[in-house]
Image (cartoon, rainbow, N blue to C red; front, side):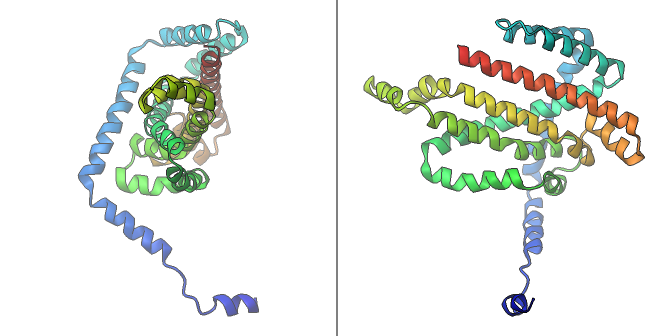
Length: 289
C-alpha cells in the first residue's frame, strides 16, 4: 500500500472515459454518413427477411433438408437430416418460426458483411508484414472486448433496432474470418507460388487461381466461426431492439420465466447446430474438391 501510494499517489487519473465520450460525440455529427450505413445494412437485412417471409415454412424445411443432403451426399448423414427435420418442426410448433427467421436474418447479414470486410483484410495481412503487425492487436482487441461494450456506441451512432445489433455482431464476429484467411494464404506451399511465378502469373492471378482456392478450407472454417459468434450476439443484441429469439430469452429473464426462456434457448441451439453442421459440411466438400 505504501509503495503504491508513493508510485501512484501524485499521478492524476487519466480521463480515458472523457476522451472516449468526446470521440463518440465527435462522430455523432456525421449523421448523414451513419444514416447511409443504416439504410444500406437495413436494406440487406430486409431483403433476407423478405425472402424468408415469402417462402412457406414447409418449403423452407424441405430446402434446408435438400441442402444438407446435397453437401453430405457422400456421407449420407441421416442422423443430421432427422435432427434438422424434427428441430425445425419443433420451432414451428412452439410458434418461434418468425423469431427464428429474424435471428437467422441477423446472423446471415452480419456474417455477409464480416466476410466482405474480413477476407480482404486477411489477404492484406498475408501480403503485408506491416499490415499484419498493425491488425493483429486490433483483432485481439475486437475479440477480447466484452460484447456488451459494443452496444453503447452502436446505439449512439445507429439508434436502436436490428442495425446496431448487426454492427455489433460484425465487429465481434469478423476477427476469425480475417485470421483464418491470413493463415490459409500463408500456408500455401512455396512450390506452388514458384510454379505460378515461372508461368508468368500476375499477383491477381496467383491470388484468385492459386492461393484462395487452396485456402478455401481455412476460409470456410473462418466463416463457420464468424457465424457462430454472430449467433452468440443474438441475446445481447436483443437488449438494443434487435428482434428474434434473443428477445424471447431476454424477456423471459426479466420475468423470471424459466419455461419460455428454455424453449427459446432450445430454438437457438437447434439453429446453431444446423448452421454449424452445414458450414462444416461445406468445408469438407471444399477439401474434397
